[in-house]
Image (cartoon, rainbow, N blue to C red; front, side, top):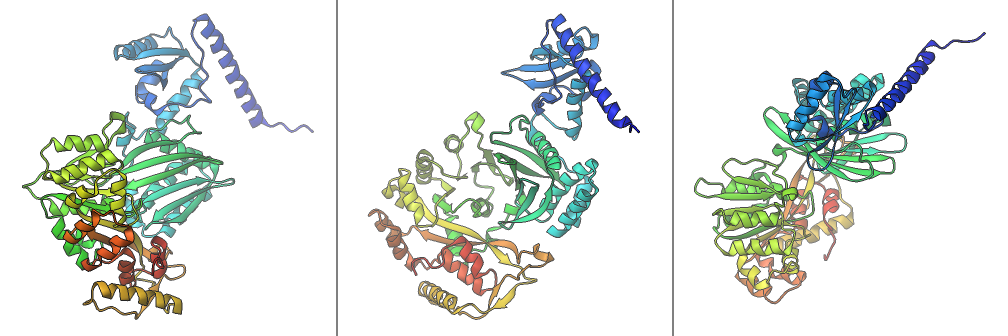
Length: 563
């Protein structure tokens, strides 16, 4: 007995009809002397979709699917003789577009039209201004308290295997990251699945695993929102979009990197609330805090903060700005990007496409009669020299550098071509900083360090007391993270982060030393009289106070170096 599969036969008939339609369109293209285009397997540029609305495209039987140099656009039409099509093409030409017309089937046009649905939430030509929030997501953000809740909700949706849940999963991914204060979302394709992780308090944690079918839908959505090209899969791309939550705009910076099993995506969340921290709450110890408060109140000079990426330098610079902000002064910033908007400050953002760099921005700022200038980062010798000169000519300058220590700042500036003699006059304070995770107050545990670790801690305590004889500290109770943590800390044992700081103050004694081009060890020895703790010593204080752990300190600094 022969089994008849009606569904399969219908699919075969549809496929034959599509192929026949394409053949007819290809023949007509030759008749009209037009290029033929088969769009179904092609990639469509988001920038092209923004040129006309979906309503206009469907009504005129056209589809703008690509762009070229200057104002060149690629337009697919079903019939060049259709009156509405002719009117739409003329309208595009009147707008200054150079229209390249292709003949295409209704099936091909439909592929382009369907793409409008993926960006139906008001995709704009400038993808960086796209907002994707709604009341439903706001409710999710307010209800989610830990990582397990996000994972459970997404896994429940994944279990249904319904394509309709795609948007909900993507929204949950974003909402969850906002709710638990994640700084980054990592989407990492592997051979059999795709891993999604959040960076929480500086450490990556698994959120869920999805299949490659859903991954491709998500990456398409992210690329569309970020203004990236869908057809580029073998090269890096960077873009951005923004999310609006209760009138607060949060920027998402997207990075796409080609990999063995697909494109790896990282979405950096630039949440203004995460860096809007007062100077008093950064974790700076009292002795250094009083020094900084005095130095940032001076009318001239330069204050630098250093450290690796992700050490909290931008947060510190913003805290300085908010501390010194006053109606009588003018403050200008050059940032990359502007992460937090401060009222009554002129904030500018680096834009490489228009050649507005830290260097050109600094030069322009100096012509604006500022009292204080904040340069997000000094990356080259010319910027360093102009910033130093600004500090010498009646301005207070805040900036950052990539070095490992406070004393290393001097050598770095000299390497950039700044004279040591000039540094002695221009510099006020050089800081270095790191971020460590704070132990979860709900589940941290007391523990007894090993004898080796006790000796290490006691040695560092001795160094602290040599710098600050009046400080009473002793090794008593120490804590560590609980294995497996709890719901309060997303099962990590840590909740939140705090800064560790060190600095050197350019005082009269140090000025004489700097001229002799000293080594870092000599600088450390010469600054002991200032009583400022090193990052390692600051970390030990916070361990003894039960704020962080020895393991966490060892993660960000070499505890045993030069002891």
